[in-house]
Amino acid sequence: MDKLTQISISLIAALLTCTGAACKEKQAVSKPESVAAKSVSKSPSRKGPEMSEKVIKSDQEWKKLLTPEQYRITRRKGTEAPFTGKYNKFKGKGIFRCVCCGNALFSSETKFDSGTGWPSFWESISEENIQRKTDRSFSMTRTEVVCGRCGAHLGHVFDDGPAPTHLRYCINSIALKFEGAKEK
Image (cartoon, rainbow, N blue to C red; front, side, top):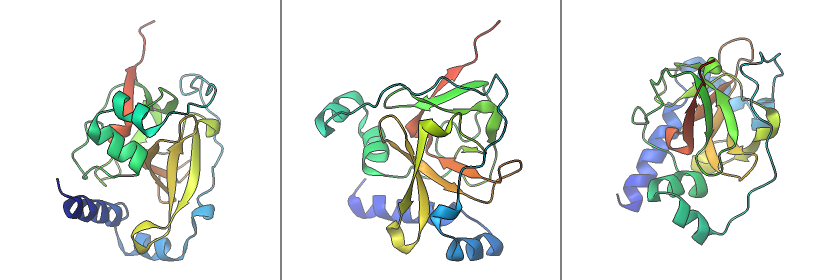
C-alpha cells in the first residue's frame, strides 16, 4: 500500500470513529483533557495484572519483533481500516493485551459493539496500564490511547460510550493479542 493510500485510509478511519451530528458537534468543542478517566468499581474477573516495569526498545528491535503492519500501527501511530480487524466482532472471554509487550489492557467484560468498525471498550483494566495523550493529527483534536508499559499506539478514547463510564476506547485490533479466560 502506498503512502497516499495509507494516509487516506487513516483520515477516513479518523472521521468514522464518531458518527452522528451530536457526536461531531461534541468532538468539535471538546478537548482531550475532558476525556478523563472515570473510576468504576472493578469486579475481580476484570481486574488485570498490574503493569510491570517499562519496556524500552529501539526501532530496529521493534521491527524484528513485530509484523510490518503491527509496527506501522503501534510504533508509527497508524490506523487499521474499519471493519477489518479480527477483534471487531470477536466475542471470546478473557483479556486483551498489548501486542508489543503483553501488558494487560482491556477485559472482554467491558467490550461492546460501537458500530464504528474497531473493537470498543468502556473501561481499561487498570489506569496505570494505559496513558492518554493529546493527538492533533488530521486537523482535529482527539485523545490518543497508548500502552503504559511500552508506549505502543492503541487507538483513541471518546466520551460517547455506554454507562457506567460513558467512555469509548476505540482500539486497533492489530495492537492487541487475546488471552482466553482459563477454565476453573
